[in-house]
Image (cartoon, rainbow, N blue to C red; front, side, top):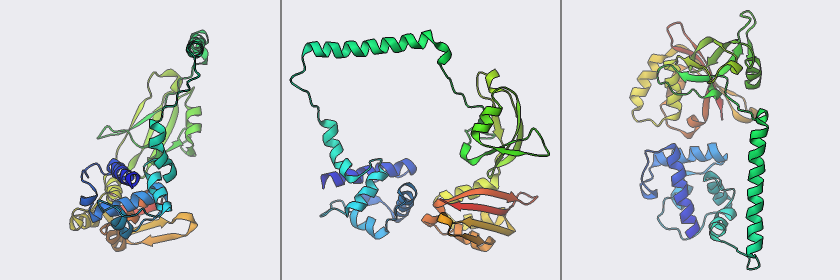
Length: 304
């Protein structure tokens, strides 16, 4: 039971990494916190936990019995430990110091002499063969035009725009190979930023990666935030969505494991975003199309 109390404490610590504004304990863990935790467990561990289970096993200050072991495994994976067995063993293993009484001073000196010799050889190799050193530098740094924050590369696609009549997508490896020795004209696309065409200098000719600034699509950013944030004023959010979404909006949600696709029109999508459910936090926007006035007319989403 002591190990389980420690696990509960670790679960709260892990929860605060995603929700740092929560500084309470299980006693003050709210119903919204429970929904957030359920979504996190589904995302990180691919496991479903019910609200009743959390009220039964995590909310109480003291527990009379342990939960089922398979659920203990889930919580342990959530805090970064492979299993419950490893969790209850780890404190013993980390505190145990085993020293053999048969180790002599001579063997200790030989051991440290061997380590010292090994480091010396490594140092000599480092200075004698400097041409073998490889310093990998990213060919470009993507940055939000207004906040100056680094843009998540997973939200961006890069295309070879050298031939404007045949723009071709590139993998990160292809991009790095092409830009290594010669300049490259690229098109940067993202659901959350305006399309940007830029000339990238050869990576072999620069000391620091060039910075490419991307102009955010404010409406797309708002929908992205709505998917992940907790609702504090649903009526205000509903009004904002009415303003930024086209009346002809079409939303396509691609379900996991090839289960098909769900379609939503504007009223259905607005209602979906104003009802807090863990499902929304597992949605990731992959493509957005805009009306000429900037309103969103098509959104493609994948279920993670």
